[in-house]
Length: 480
Image (cartoon, rainbow, N blue to C red; front, side, top):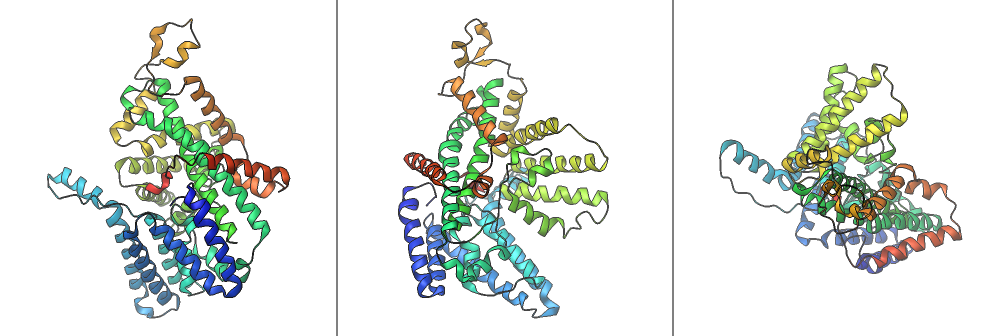
């Protein structure tokens, strides 16, 4: 079940929402249990075979966390924490990276170990990181409550379960204990519906449009010319942003319907003026996790410049590995790690750059790096980059020949997309202008007055989006 589906919007959500508040008036633990069961049903709807996996993970992590949080077995606490972290990493490693490692071992050593073609369990990257953070905080004696219903909801709450944001236990567990969370709050409902409408529109009207063009280009990288390649890669750059930020918007909006505030995960990242600024704006909760639980424990910036640069490189290497089991993701992480090191050195050295130029350079770097993030192989990524740099000829797509009739036709190249070239270019420009200059959904939600005009705006977005649900597509971050 996905947010952009009829069964979710018209069946699952209203049933869960109504019973949540009805049971909350009778007995709050009933409402919690109902929400937990509904969230597990939501997860199991994809593939019931992986429901036991998340349940076992929840029970083991909760048990270890409760033991550590109560400061027991002081002489073995670090060992117990280590076992807990190894359990989570091993679980993630087996399901997400087993075939990748075996495949590379076969290549390097000429062995013939059999691949298992393991189906990646949905959300395992997200709920694994959340629970590792819980264990570490329990070891630090920073966890305050030990209620399994609250913990279960912290891990499996359906708005954020599948693709984030990565939620810290301190941000939500207390909210599940708050009696006010089980009483209807019309302010939260209006905010939630607005940001859900914006997120759904981002996904079905914007991201899925760009997805068609991005997929067409990346599925035929050998035919890409200069213009084709830029249309392909810009389409993916916009698809990824509107797809993932759209999911996060919907998650935040849905949670507000249940009086739960989830953390902000996007803050107009393509407006960033350096790579550090980009990571303060893109997938904010992942950046927070990597900083808090890897960068700082490694020493952060407290152990000299060289060690600081090494630590920065490590967290981006981990980020690349976390996103996917492939060399392209590793290269993407390395690129961002090196860029972050250069950015930090640049600032410490006192260098400055014009803000507009800095913005352009940052966007172009992020855009080029996304090629490795999207390409199916290293070879495909290189082919796309070569086309972007003009190695395949700097020609115009055939559709523009009908517009610029006086130009030499020998400059025109074949174009793999079905849509008219002018339509592609205009749509890309509109998408870029929205990403670069428009208010983001959070700004709209908090800064715009909720009146009749805003209600009509949200209703129009919902109506249009629902009309597009005949062609359901999954969110990109379901693959990570």
